[in-house]
Amino acid sequence: MPTEKDGSAEALTAHLQRMSDSVEQISARIARLATVLDIDLQSDSEINRLLNMDGGAPNGYERRQSAMPPPGPERRKSYQQEELRALLVLRYRVSRRYVDRIGIQAARHVLVSAQDQLERDGFKPGAAGTDLRRLFDGV
Image 1 (spheres, rainbow, N blue to C red):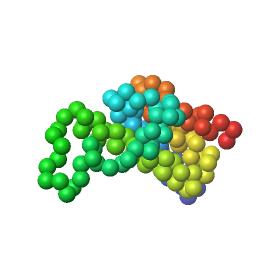
Image 2 (image 1 turned 90 degrees about the vertical axis):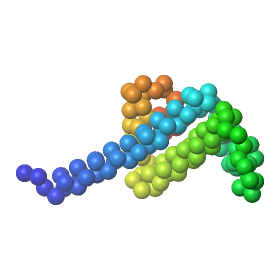
Image 3 (image 1 turned 45 degrees about the horizontal axis):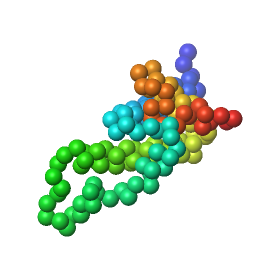
């Protein structure tokens, strides 16, 4: 016979799965962009370079100008780099929020589960960035 405790355990499990799915979707997009841009997210220097990008519009475009730079591969690459940067920041913030909300052990489980699922889906280990198992060693 189901009890109230069983229902809350199921709800918690479902909530943790949604959290993992959310991180997995963000990480999958990160991995795809990194592949297209040929960026090694296992390299701390590459991640730092991305995170410290200007964050401005591509090729110095300003809204005050009457015409945008012509479309082309460089403009597309610039937009993709900016998207990758934003997704990395988003994932870091989401991860931190998870640690604050559910604790480090549960957050570790959620984040590592998302990473494991990406690998099962065919992404190379570490394609989306830092190996979370290594990050959480000792936790």
